[in-house]
Image 1 (cartoon, rainbow, N blue to C red):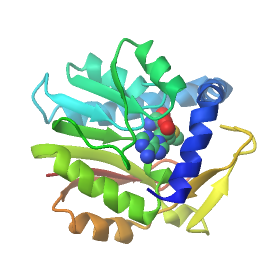
Image 2 (tube, helix red, strand yellow):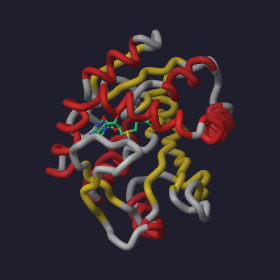
Image 3 (spheres, rainbow, N blue to C red):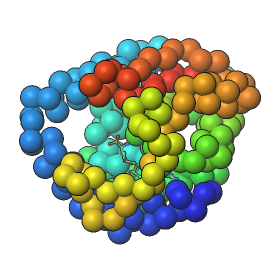
Image 4 (cartoon, rainbow, N blue to C red):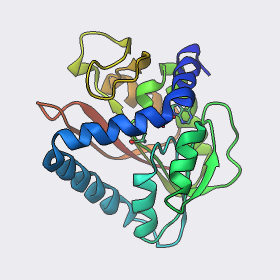
Length: 218
Ligand SMILES: C[S@@+](CC[C@H](N)C(=O)[O-])C[C@H]1O[C@@H](n2cnc3c(N)ncnc32)[C@H](O)[C@@H]1O
């Protein structure tokens, strides 16, 4: 695992409860916008999960507060949520979800899954980390399984990577590592894993291009 991810994980381990608070504060700044974003995300999750039979095993990597995992459970799937920080694990368990402590770069997958969901986590991966995660998830999926993830788009920034502590939204008092990926770069890594790109779009931000959103199929 990269030094960048290792240092960023240390921040989450120490500050997960603060992260959970700032996220709520951020959403409260514009509740209507937060609601619209949530509805859009849930529609996206639903439309992809519906490709799979109900009840199959699904893993979420880097679940944070567990909202996405809770939604996947509500849809009728056997979801396991995961994260690396104790305070995230507690927040997820409070939602009555199956939870494991899991560092995707360090730990081995103990089970096989029909889908793996990884939302807003690639932002903290170097290119080498991303390669590793794509290969490891490929190996952990059942045949025809889906890997659903997003990464921040290099088109929106004039740097490849940076250490950031956002001034107002998600302020944590410590910088975290952010990597901005080019679509061509990710497509190239993906092509070496065996995955097929099943679906792709860009979304978010002023020009609807902040995030690169992939649905990959084994
Ligand atoms: C920006 S937060 C996103 C949380 C959640 N997925 C969401 O969309 O609200 C990034 C998450 O990635 C997790 N993370 C970072 N590196 C990780 C790693 N190597 N293994 C597992 N989780 C990791 C962090 O602990 C944190 O929960």
